[in-house]
Amino acid sequence: MKKVKLIAKLLLILLFVSVTGMLIYHRDLILRSFERGRSFDYVTTNKCESLETTNNVNLKNNTLDTIQDQILALKNKFKIPAINVCIAKDGEVILNKSFGCYNPVKQIPASDNSRYRIGSISKSLSAITLLSLVQEGKIKLSESVQNYIPDLALEKNISFAELAAHQSGIRHYEGLEFFSNKEFNNANESLSVFERDKLLFEPGTNYHYSTYNYCLIAAAIENLTGQEFSKYVETNTCEKLNMINTRPERSDDYLNFYTSNVKTGEVRRAIKVNNSGRLAGGGFLSNATDLVNMMLNLDSLLYPKYQKQLFTIKKFNNGEQGNHDYGLGFRITKLSKSNRTLIHHGGTSTGGRSFLLKIVEDDVIVAICTNSNSNLFFRPQSFDLQEVYNLVKPLIFN
Image (cartoon, rainbow, N blue to C red; front, side):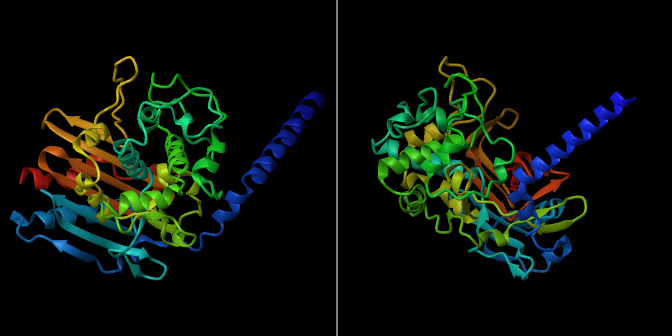
């Protein structure tokens, strides 16, 4: 009996030490969770008027009305405070509209100038920037990133193509890295998070999605150009693609990003995070208009052969494709029944969900940006490729 009591005491001590250690280790995260302010009901986020900039009334059978109804259904399903949608057909924007409150606390409606966390769609922008440097002859996709980051602690040489296509073997986020609030002054500083970790496989032999691949691309571009990655992208990519609302996050931007509970309808400001360490792979702010412009104006920046590299699934070094669907910064999905090619990328952030889709054969581009991510008992719930594709089906089959 004494032995049982002793074991019980030891277990309680161990539990106490573990919980205390966890609280100390995650102290910053816990404190940030209490700084989010009050929660409120989703209904209050619908009191802001919808703002519309483009609406082509020449489309038949009230097609845009049907699409608008679907957008509102999507907004209500995932309890999104503000949603911004831009759609282009045959090279022209036919719908650019925002619904709901960009800042529900102050009842500020979403507008043309509202910016959203686009998450991993930042990879698409970064890949385009990389290919522009390849086009200029300043970088070769086949060369090692170590040529530009000589002190890199990675155990194997990795090419730019392997990084951009997630074939490097570098791990993705671990633990609570996704919620990091650490400030990094540049891309090179952020490499300390992962560069000494063991690779998951030999570069070029497998696929494993990792935002950290794009941290390396950004660091190499900084060393090559002598500029901060964000400044280089804004000047050399965004300006040429007419992406006037795309930039890194600033200190007070987080006030406009929220987390929604799809079950209870409760909306609350998202926990404060700092995306400076993953800018190239998940840290830019933008909106639906800019994302559509990125695709519409790509010819002004890249020759067709370089665009083709973005939109072609990269095979492994042995010539096999495997089960992945990734090119360079974009996913490519083939629909066999309708014989259509979908070029797309989604982005999930703390306080944001975005999606970009181009249907090649129909020359349709759609971008959706929102200022919340939806959670149910810590399990993310949000719209995906199928729902975004369904949104623009009336443009295809009408």
